[in-house]
Length: 245
Image (tube, rainbow, N blue to C red; front, top):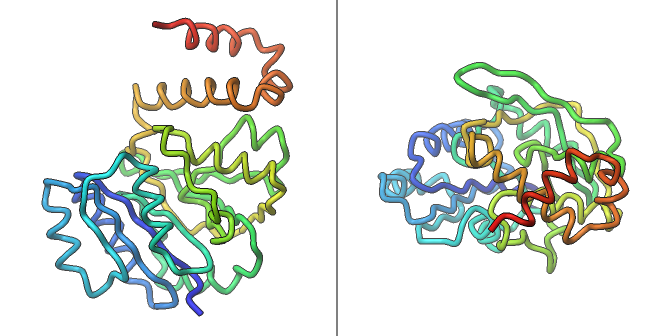
C-alpha cells in the first residue's frame, strides 16, 4: 500500500521548483508518490514539469485561487496514507535514504512533526519544537508546515481554509489539536525550508501576523483572551487591525 504522498505547489518559481523536484527524485526509495500542482505559471515551470513527467504520479498546470487552493488540489489527488508538503524552493535534506527512514516510522493516525532547517541567503539554522505540543504552544506558536507529515484521515471533510491567504496551516494545526488529534515528535529532521517564501518576507510576513491575530480573535475568542487578554501590546495591535479602514 502506498504510504506517503509528497505534494509540491508552485507558481512562477521555476528555480525553486527545480530545487525541490531534484531533491525528491534523487531519493533511493520509491515508496511514495509525487504530485506537483502548478498555478498556470508563465516562466517555464509547466514545461519543466512536463520534461520530468516520468517521475510524477500526478501534475497539473492551471490557474488557481492561491496557496491553499493549490494544496487542497494536491490533497484531493493524493493516494498515500500520509501527506508531506514541500513547496517550491523547499528541499529534502541531503540524504537519499531520508524518505525510507521517515516512512518506516509512520504508523499512527496522527500529525508528525520534526526539527527543520531554515535556509536564508545560503545560511542555515535548525529549529526544533517541544517534544509535546500543549494548548498554549498550539495557539500562540506555529509549526513550519514543511516539518509536518499528516495522516490522510485528518483531511477527511476538512481541507485548508481557502479564504485565508497566509495562515490556513496554523488554523488547521490548532483545529486538529482541539480535535485531540495526536501530535507526534520525530527526532529526525527531513526538510529544509526556503525562508524566501510568501509568508517569510517583509510585508507579507507582517500581513501573515495580522491575519493570524484577527483570526484568533474572531474564531477562537476564548483562547485569545486566555493567552493574550493581559497583553496590552497584542490588544493594541488587534484594535488597530480591526479599526483600519
